[in-house]
Image (tube, rainbow, N blue to C red; front, side, top):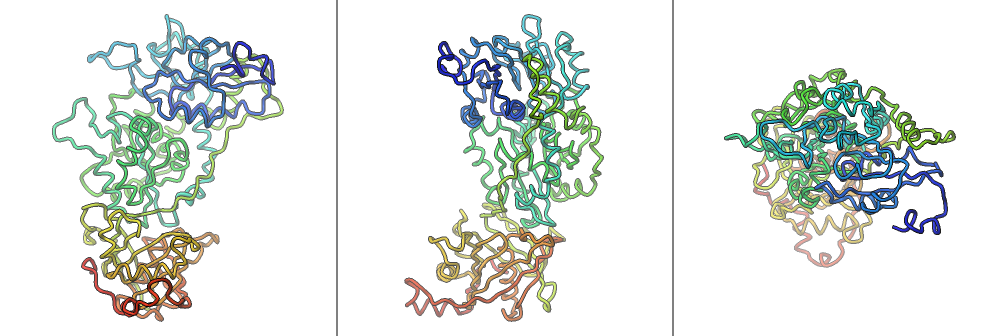
Length: 621
């Protein structure tokens, strides 16, 4: 690199005399913590920031893209070692940190230091436990001297363990809070907005599956205790399948928060392939860089392991259930290990839904108060403490005109639930006048059997039918589905207008009794086999915001109403649809009939068939 550093850089740069700050990246995980503190240097024209990558981590995928996103000059590692800096900030150990020329500050890239991990150059012994990452001499010392000028800790309990494990490094310790945790705390008032962004409506529960990396994690599936135990089974396939088969699609929203080392160690495409069935059943895979903290804040329950994410969830009062927790991988004195001795465990035997509901109902907001207190001894103050430390090390005063602030967590994009797997719809009529129906829907993935209403005493016991998204992978189900759904904008030139698509769809799927074109978050246009065209629109919530229930639910309710022998006129002007504890008031508005278009216009046989009684699907009951 020749600009803004290099042999002749002074000839080309615009601002001279700037203090140089180097952010040292090891992998995507550590880089996310560096991005947390990046705003502490904003608005200061006296500093010039750089980034570099040690190249020492086995998880290097995704690093170039992340560094490019930060927009800072990226120094090659060898040049970084030959360049003078006023401040060096790293969020991990490893690599030749001792070769860098500047005052090194090391932050934790999780909630403190908890995991045991052997240093790369340390001999591996089967008889001794690996050292605690970030608190042991193997990581902290070089030639008997501390690597770092400042070792940032978030709580005095970490200092106690540091003094015990590596007293030589204790003088470098600085208590400066946790910027990641502070960003979470500052965003807690945004919980309702985050839930709506994830498509979670009133009466719904958001269940987040959280996993760290390595074989004994929840996603890794290898049992604790070393070698695989005879008869021990991988929990992950069971969990992913039960999320779909046990949790009603309209009462629960599910999301996965996976460690970046899973995403970038195995490849995003591979991870998405592993999650494919669950994603088609409605699981939202949260990207590894953005949105995981918002998902934690929005969650009603976290199914996790010994990850910092699970601990952060407990710290903010979210119920947690542990699907994996290898105590031998942790410092037994750490708060994370204490959480493993406290939180309930996820069991393969019994109902997943019952375990989740029990964890939520039995949870007290103060249950994990002690863990919250150990997350940071200075909650909300890390920006002030860290900036003071950084500027003291650089030897210049902090900018008086600009307060030390962290970036607020952004509002994620709206991601409504999208189930492309076929759905088994269970319906019970609650009232005929006025029309009111209870709906429970379950995704049916692959060769899994259809849900058995008898196994769920809360499910409606009445009629049942199958609904399918027109973009489903199980295309064979489309030919026998009772309700077929298409999701697109009203003015999508490829498909719309809705009436035209609906007419074509009824011809294409002869067993179908009703088709629905979902063209908004709370509405759809349906056409019945008798030829009636109807707009279904949900009433807004009490605060005026749109109902977030999947509009396909309303189409299934109307289909059940009609096939039970009721007339469309009897459903006017509105029906009430219940999903779990939520009631959705749906306006039923007949639309003017448009003349058929295209090749179907002269097809009298198709026209006659479209207005006759539907051919019964073999899957109807």
